[in-house]
Length: 149
Ligand code: BTN
Image 1 (cartoon, rainbow, N blue to C red):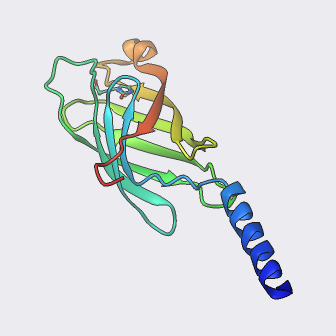
Image 2 (image 1 turned 120 degrees about the vertical axis):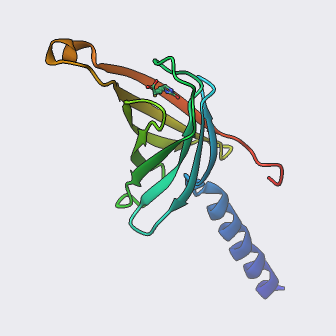
């Protein structure tokens, strides 16, 4: 009887501790942002280096939008969860480059949100136009749930 009580106590403590520990953010998967752009992060290696693809919903060009590659880096020193990261999108259909920096937040229900800021550098024909070459903004990404989840 005493053994059973101790076992149940240990079990409930273990389960309680588990439910208290914040869900870790996993960048791998499909994400959509507030503009309707879609991003897929396909792999993150042991050093935090990751790659994927980006389909923007908007463009500053008149070109046809195409899927573009992204490469990034996830900060791995922090083991407390909610990591910071950065990535670059090298637009395949324009002369521009965008760099994003952000952090993954996980709420009490385990929902992940990527809060980001970006700089979009457009190519200018000459130095005189450099002043208008860089746009800045923010994007919020949420995970696109797959059918299996
Ligand atoms: C271009 O128009 O030359 C490239 C596309 C830029 C799209 C920008 S990047 C920041 C912002 N977030 C998005 O999802 N799309 C726009």
